[in-house]
Figure: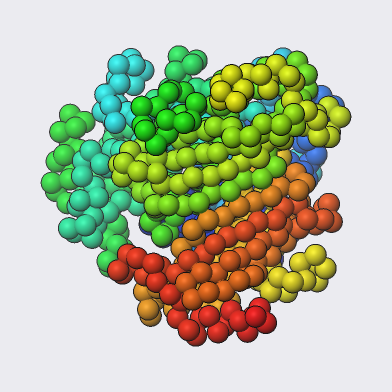
Length: 146
Length: 146
Length: 146
Length: 146
């Protein structure tokens, strides 16, 4: 995990760096659409590591579940390349985090994709929707200056 | 490819059947979010097979490119299961097809996810946006009763 | 799961049928090498379902772990196609099953790949190698006429 | 691409560094077996970049095709971790490179897996087996001190 010096990712408190792999390209010779959601997921997990999601999940049984996600593809990616993937929370409620993702191509020096994710609090013991622990919400507010 | 007898997919002219694989589950013990986009892609490709997309691509150099896609997760999927995945075009313009996808779980007997895809006409020789051949548009209209 | 009527898979007590997906092809326009191991895994899991591996895992804590696997690629696969994937156990010891896999292409009407897997008994509670329950071994012997 | 300072990879002229992603874990909570072959593939491609495989493929139409591959799993991998993946050619013939791969876990500070790959020269225009250009063979010999 890193803080990006890339201006287009300046608003993202969590940014990870990932290699583009040859095997991620499909028969159209560019990175397959499903791979962008692996990029988003990896940034979302890194964001969760930062705010301690997994630690809360262990102690409270309440964890995140992805309710919806989307991607807008701006420029095709090809191997070889390295991407920076940012994750931020735009809107926070007791039970929902609305996140935004951005994929920046180092080779092309521009955004290759943007995306969204709706991450809902889920009680994995009672198997139903829940609310995030207040301390977790507070950590997101501090991280995002919300 | 098949025409579904499943009521919730009745509006989808193209429906494919796919097995849920054990290896598609992630550490949370249900099918990983990226896999749903593989499901959508497979239905989109089957739809393209039906209207002859690849044949037009060979003769005109103009083919589809995915500009945006989204998924709403309704119920987690687990192995073993089989899903029916429907694809339909809701809105058609000269250069854009707005598609909808639905994933029906045979085991749970209900929809597990819905999604969208924006499929844009692209000139793979001139490397820029284009318009779909009129004959292809006509085939979509007939298939969808648009 | 099915019993194959395909002669080249006649020796395989467990055979599954899987679609080849467009998105499994890589930039060389044929099914990527990693996908064959997903095919093998899916047949291995179906084999485990047949002999009750997961049921034993729940009751004894002892389950299978893959120690080694290999694939020989005979003919490239492309979308569209359907493959039959067979799994059999060639050699059985108290702690090890040596398995063989075969991938048959319906479109090409011939074997596309063969493979091996060494599946070792593992005690998931004590985190160390173990031995398979005698009843499980007996089921494999009956299934394989060993 | 990098030259490793890791003793267990000292014999590997090409070593790449890859992050272990959360989404690469399966329902058994460790990195799925198919992912190791993506690791090997990525190192094989980096090796090909070093000796100029793709440049030869463009000018001669002769490129590599994977005829067989295997993996021995030594220690399970989990997120978070970073792996170093080495690739070397152990035996070289006019038409065949026998390669070896090794996956080193930074977190565990030991080898997590080893593997092999048989990479055969293929004439992608005439669609049949071929021989590697002499200049390419020479580059491998120099790189490997063969």
